[in-house]
Image 1 (cartoon, rainbow, N blue to C red):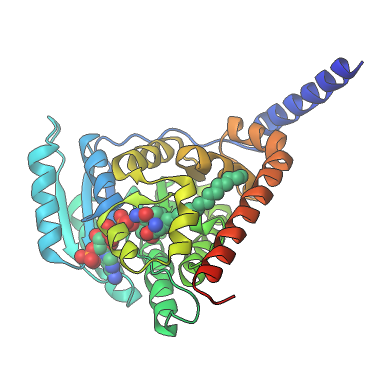
Image 2: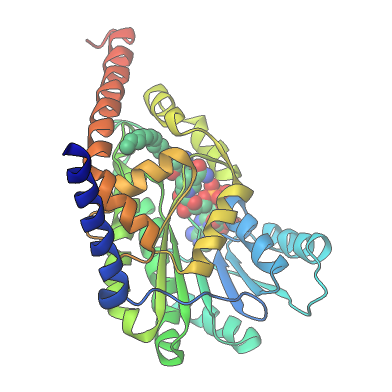
Length: 329
Ligand SMILES: NC(=O)C1=CN([C@@H]2O[C@H](COP(=O)(O)OP(=O)(O)OC[C@H]3O[C@@H](n4cnc5c(N)ncnc54)[C@H](OP(=O)(O)O)[C@@H]3O)[C@@H](O)[C@H]2O)C=CC1
Ligand SMILES: CCCCCCCCCCCCCCCC(=O)[C@@H](N)CO
């Protein structure tokens, strides 16, 4: 009796999900890297640099944007020497602060496009993090985080979106963070800038879907990069202890998942086991681009919510214990 009841529920959900595929959504077509133009902000370091390396190896022409010319030149040299393919693809770079002024960013991107053709994939990886309690964070730091992590991505996206829509081809990649899925101790400033990307990504995806442009929003966990090392210097113990629960990952593994997401046109890209859980728990009203993920979400959200409540209580305990140890409570 119970067995056939469960079977009926399973069948119902199965039919529902396939209904989604057949009648409600057209899933993205695969993207092919060879010969394409991939522009990567923050391409001279960390996750952006690993993405540049992998895109270049796949035969893409790569444009790197960042501020420091030496790091850019060094990355270009590294790619040309270490990732050489038998294809005739190339790497160029431009120095620009993407957080400041839309017109300046737009000019640089137009220059990049005049050399390598219209951008097919825009990867917004330039970003940084500062962790601290609200009392320790300066209001200026909130502003700087929004200017780079959020507006920097908006500027670059606005500069390429017109031609992508016109050509019915393109991928916009936004690098959020697991701290853009859950707010944690120390991330009051950083999380705001990363949650903002999700609102931007979801709205934009609805706007550009008819033009075959796909938005990919990635949620990396802690990843060993120069930016991470910098963040660690002033990270509160609470934030360290809580973040440890989803481990420390390698930037080339993170980049690999993102590249696969770009190929598939996945809206929501996660990394690691905790990433998988958080992705499905927080899927909410986000676009569906993948049948398996949608299927898992329909089944698992309630159960995952239960798991998240347990995690939350352990995080709250960490914060309380730290306050007690600091003799604040
Ligand atoms: N590392 C991690 O643990 C995680 C990182 N992320 C996110 O991934 C992205 C990449 O992080 P990560 O690889 O660690 O960062 P890194 O600090 O290693 O690299 C940042 C890159 O962005 C460039 N950049 C910084 N400011 C600007 C600016 N104003 N204009 C143009 N370019 C700029 C830097 O070059 P230059 O300084 O020369 O301008 C550099 O190339 C960020 O958005 C980050 O928030 C998400 C989750 C985890
Ligand atoms: C359903 C239950 C699953 C629960 C798992 C919870 C794990 C939460 C850990 C969050 C880690 C946040 C990392 C932020 C990384 C980052 O963006 C900075 N390092 C940038 O430099």
